Amino acid sequence: MSSANGGWNRRRFVGALAGAGAGLVGCSTSSGPSSAPTPPGRSSDPASSRAAGSPGAASPSPARTSSVPARKGPSPLYLGTYTSGEGGGTGIGVAAYDAGSGRITGTGTITGVTDPSYLASHPDGRTLYAVAEREAGAVTAVRLSDRKVLGSRSTGGAGPCHLSVHPGGRWLLSANYGSGSVAVHPIDSSGALGELRDLVTHSSPAPGPGQEGPHAHQFLTAPDGGHVLAVDLGTDTVYSYRLNERTGALTEVSRARTRAGAGPRHLTFHPGGRYAYLANESDDTVAVCAYDRASGRLSVGAPQSTGTGSGTNYPAQLLVTANGSYAYLANRGHNSLTRYAVEADGARLRLLDTVPVHGDFPRQIAFSPDGRLLFAANQRSGTVSVFHVDAADGGLRLAGEPFASPVAVCALPL
Image (cartoon, rainbow, N blue to C red):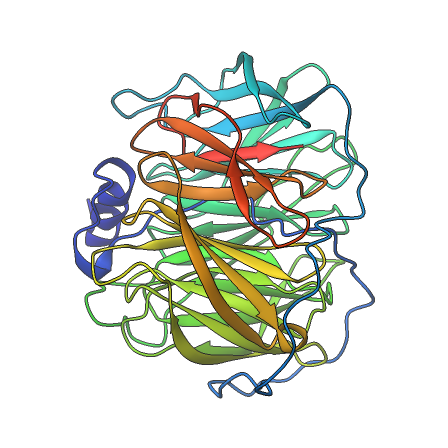
């Protein structure tokens, strides 16, 4: 097995990351509703300047978490796991949660999928997609109406750890951690996947300190809809591509470098579309990034504290409330959630506090569609914690005892 795949294997099963070279991934990257206007122009200049922001801005407005009305009765929840690891699950966990109380009830398992460590849903809500985080990586489509597996397709790389659906619903984007590449698959009218349409390997720049190669960790669509961004932990770089929505082809337009050894892992956009927030796994920081919608260019700002002290932490994922007032960071080593106030129309994060996650190794966090609940998948404890999100100040309150789920690495509420 190559050194790249060795690093991928460690990140799956050890859960105690050995230095800066390993990493784990979350599940849902949603931070509230967003629009996807017509793709704008392009630029080919790399970017590394700091994000702009003016000091002295007022405190954020009350956290009206979403315009989506609260649901009544049970809502679906899908749970990612590893099927080939000790103590793992047998497929995608199926559960329901009460939107008022946050209580989770298990209802079954979707079998016939292997190592579904990351999940995403189609915009129409009819199809679920899962990575198969294995050496021969794949992505799988599942029809939700009858839980029928619609088939799998190769990602052309090793250890895919993230996927997302382009807002137009025609393309699936996935990131191969082990081989440091990103892939594009077509989605047909039934939700099923076609053969790999494009594959780009991050061959430059050279790997950062402690890294043996590129490690693509996330592949997502920017709010403008025409650009897709790949976060690579191994090369300390966020790559911006223009996606050809007719052919699925990728054209690189810009690169944004973090400081050496930061290990960027997860990027989340502010609803306004002009700023994004980057979680850096290896150096335990976050950064505010400016985003130019016309060119797709991202500019990484100065590193900021996660509020977790001097111990080993490995931050995992950031979320932003739908009104852009608060951001939350999952801290795996500290076993906590950091709360930030978002200020200056998205240009600044102000650290407020951290709260215990009531689980071990929170690998991924996700909001319910109405933004009133926050779910945390805790890998080592095999639990999912649920929190009420306070509409006034963004505070988090635990909603009962965490729900037991084998090697919980992903929680996707719909």
